[in-house]
Each structure stands twice: as C-alpha cells, then as structure tokens.
Length: 247
Image (tube, rainbow, N blue to C red; front, side, top):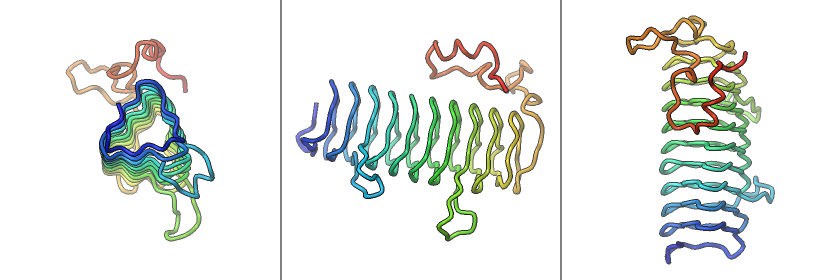
C-alpha cells in the first residue's frame, strides 16, 4: 500500500492499512493512524526547528489529498480530511474530523476543536483558537499582527458553533462568540457577542441570530444551525443537538 516511488522514513510509525501515494515523502518523526490514506506528492512531517522535536501525529481514518504539506510538531485527531495543496505549520493541534479545504493554510501554534469545517482558500494565522463545530467559509482570513510588520502576535478566537462567511477578515485579538455569524465580506475589528450577527466594514452588530429565518419556505429559525443541518455528522453527535447549544 506504499507506492514504489514514495519515500518513507524507517523511523516513521505507520498504523495498519495505511496507504501512501506516489512521490510522497514521509519524514522521521511521524505517526500515522490506522486506515489512513495519503495521496501522491505530499510531504508529511516536514522538518522544522520550530517543531522543537515534537512529532507529527495523524489520527486514524484520515485522508490527506495530493500536494499537501504537514510540518512536524502538529497533532490531528481521527478522521482528519484535507483538500489538495494545503499547508499546516508547526504545533497545530486539531480535534476529531477536522476538514481543511483545498489551498488552505494554517500558520502554526493554533488550536482547532472537534468537527471544524474550513472551506477552500482559508488562512488561519498563528496563535488562532477555533472552537468546536465551527464553520469557516472560502477566502476567510484570521489575522494576528496588530501593527504589521511586528513580532507581536494576537491570535483570533472563534467560539463553538460560530460561522465566519466568505471573504471576511477577522483582525488580531478579536473574539467571535459562540453561535455567532460573521456576514460575508466583513472586516471584524471588535468582539462579536454570542448568538449575534455582525457584518460590514467595519463590522457592526446587525441582529441576533434568532431573527434569521431559513429561506426554504418554512420560516423556521436558521440558527442555531444544528436545529436543521446535520449532514456529515455522526448520529451520536447529532443526538446531542436535540436541544440548542447552551449559552
């Protein structure tokens, strides 16, 4: 299950039924969980002094698509899934079933929760914190330098169940609250309260998320989104959504 053209270090630890595609490189300090598939032209465990000797750990049942680069020093839970050509730098920790879309980039020293969904072309700056069940849509940027260029790092924080819509920028140190929605094309320079909608440039409070109705003719509330959207989540997780998330 290892392509003849792949280069796999004898020091790497591969679980059962791991497949490695053509011309992929797996470096020394790498641990790959059972039933994981890594496509061709990837570089897994890219060496870096910033990893400070920590291994790259990829959980079981993961899928790493072609041309992806994962640096040493990061840890990913089970069922990690990437698009093509993603880059994840050192000391990123992600929970179960993190999905990272094509051409996305995580700059390291980040904390990512369980069941986080990042679409394509997402940039997550160093020191960012992303909670559980967060949605980050295409071309979103989470920044970290309050007066660039500088050595000051102030990571963004995105709360559980929050959604950041397409082409939005969240500025350094900003906290987006639990269950909040950042509208598309927003520049977020101040904290967003839980269960509210913020939008514009600069982003301002628009309304509570409870005011938004689904555009499917039912007039049901669109938020919390867990009340109507379940695709891709295991039944045991969905079972906990019978009651809206606690404030």
